[in-house]
Structure formats: structure tokens, C-alpha cells
Length: 383
Image 1 (cartoon, one colour):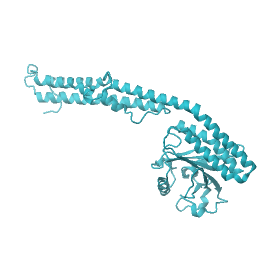
Image 2 (tube, helix red, strand yellow):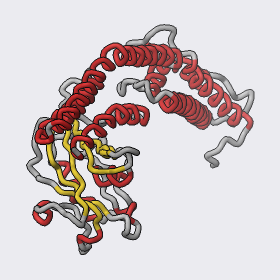
Image 3 (tube, helix red, strand yellow):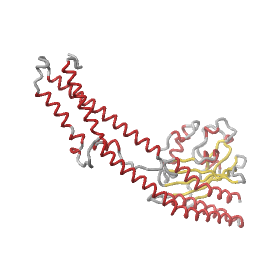
Image 4 (tube, helix red, strand yellow):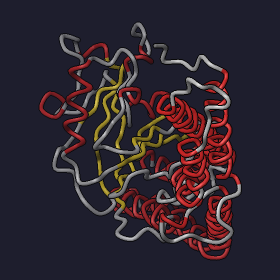
């Protein structure tokens, strides 16, 4: 006996089940007219009566005049299978369409942060398309209003604070020019200006703790005195001569590093040197681009250049997992008339993930806010 419908009545019954299943699935595009609370009142449950009605109609109907050898159990199986398969396909396709629509929205509006608890597919499956649209409109309106409010706060509250910090840093530089003996004190002030700017920018984040340090680059021709004792994350078996510079932490805004860390920077004269740069400060120093680690607890493999040895990657991950900060950004310190002389790096550490925000636009905005202070710090270091 075939598992597929063979007689005209079996084919007809299967097609009826498919048609009813399609209508049941498509009803999700109409859905409830008002917000549903209990699952039993959702169209996914209430409209099952149409499928059940068809089932019992086949069960009690006299079909012998169509086919005297009719097998009702087979007819019921074909009806139910057709109903369930087509209904599942329709609902899955609608859910996929809704998911894709929201993915496109999030990508085209990265500045608008939809709450993570908003589940468009879940809302559709439980309440129907009308309920989904109602939730979607409310959620997007709230997110867009929140974005507008953040922009307004940025213009009315943050910018004056930013100008105040920038003026403070500029005046601090002028003090160093008249008294070079206060370089360390002024450098610490500018680092504090940087952390204040980042905190002010994300002032709505509760429990945010930000600190900043700066590292000075020592060329390999004049290495720091404590190089051997403090140097970390070198390539196994590689001589120190492959490194062009060594980055040394010189000071923090608020705290102080217990590691006395020195980082190696691959020399430009080495083969594949760009692919051997360490993430963070070394990468920022050599490329001039800001290097960001959004989560020190879960650093992705693509955060490392392809030729960084696996043992070095593992060492960096283990080192960062022990730190109190959860994300950091490294910004190159430039100085000179043409702003091309790289003399060090500022590292900004945050107690929360995504120190420079989530989107590329936020990365650029915060990066542009911080760079003037890094330039002023460069003037202090060079004084």
C-alpha cells in the first residue's frame, strides 16, 4: 500500500487539507485585532477550529458514493499531513520574512538600538501578524524617540562638557611649556580629561567605570631599562631584534597598573610585519588606527592578525580575562607639525563591554572625540 494518495478522493482530501492549512497559516498576516494575553485566544489556537471541522467532516461524511472502497483512516491521515505540512511551511516562510525585515531594519538603522527582549518572530507566532505589527511599531517608535533624545542630550549637555574638558587639557599643555617639570602631573590630568569625556558620552550607563593610561614607544636602539623583566607576548624563538619599538605604560588617570607591562611592536623591516602585529596598543601605534576590543572575556579569533602565534593569542586572552575592565580601545598618540610622528598610545579601559559603542558610527564618533586629547598629550610627552 502506497504512502502517497493514489485515488481521486485521496488526492482531493490531501489537497483540501493543504488548502485549509494554507489558510490557517496565512491567517497570521491578519491576526488578532487587539493585543492578546492568553495563548488560547491567539489566532494560532482559535483558528484550529477550521482544521478540526474539516477533520470531523471527513470522519462522519458518507463518502461511499464517491468511492465504495474508500479507506477513511487513510483519508484522515492525508488530510492531517497536508494540513500540518502546508501550515508549517506557510508559518515558517512568514516568520522568515519577518526576521529578514528586522535584520534589514537593524542594518539600515544601526544608530537605533532595539531592545534585545523584542522578539518579532515570537510575537508573530504567538499573536499573529497584526499583533506583531503593533509591537513592532511601538518598539521602533520608542527606539527612535530614544535616539532623538540621546542626540538632543548630546547637543545640549555633552558638547558643553566636552568643550570644558578640551579647554582644561589645552590650558594644562600651556603650563607644561613654561614648567616641564610637571609633565607627569599634566599627563595624568589629560588622561582624566579623556576618561571624563567617555563617561560623559555614556552618562546613562549605570555602574560605568572608565580609566585611561598612556604608553610611550621606545625604539629598539634605545630600549627601556627594565625590558627583559617586563616584556610580554613575544613570538616564541624570535630574537628581540625583530621588534622595532617597545611600548611602556607610563601613567594612569586614576589607577595604576600592577603589571608594569611592556609590549613588543613588530618592526616594519620584518617580513609580513602587519600580519604579526599584536591587537590593541601595538596595532594602533603602527597603523595609526584605533584598535578596539569589545569584550575581553570573549575575544574572537579575528581580533588577531593571521600570523600571530596561537600561543601568544592564548597568553593575551588569559591575561585580559583576569583584568577588571571588560573592554578597551587603543588610540595612537601623534605629534609634530604634520601630525605624523607616532610617539605612543592611549588605552581607554571600561568596566562594561563596547567601550566605544556598538556600531561603526559610534566607534568613529568617540574616536574623533578622543583624538584631540591624544594630540595634546603628545605635546606634553614631547615637551
